[in-house]
Image 1 (cartoon, helix red, strand yellow):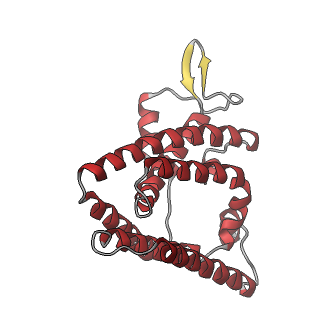
Image 2 (tube, one colour):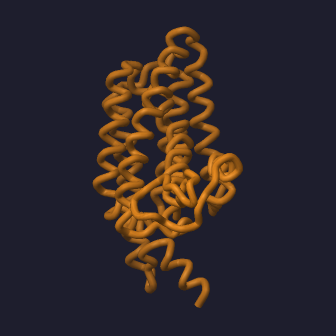
Length: 233
């Protein structure tokens, strides 16, 4: 969606992803350090994290179609207000000199959108990890491997995510379960084996249901872009 909105050429998308991941690693490291410090200082923060996950699950369940307009992103709008921009791409450069003046390119806007989107995702994913462990090394490395793995599989997942139409419902139940686990963590500890079994089972049900649903769909949509073209036709 971000690449389509900013019309990022295919050959430049890898550059945005690379620097987007570098920024995501740094920002997540900062957020993880802050979260660990808060939980170690104020034990009641774990209830806040649990409530946040439950709220997110309810919001995902109620919100049927989530529409995001990159042009309305707060960070992108702030950058457009304070920084001079050119409407043209200049190779792989984020900043260039035009008529003796340093200006940002649309590639930099795409990078800002990617970074801000990751921060929004981290608000849910990082508290969820605290339900498993509070070791900052494990939390950071698990996030690091997840981000690097997504970087390698991005172009594969981008074409298949539309097929997993019921995966969102699985995530709703997972977030709700993790949130409840955090809320009752001081009263009852759910064994890790049970937690992992439930999470894997919920994900498996979502994937299988999606595959069965796509088999019954006579006109399966391969991607969000395909859905847009079909709606226009």
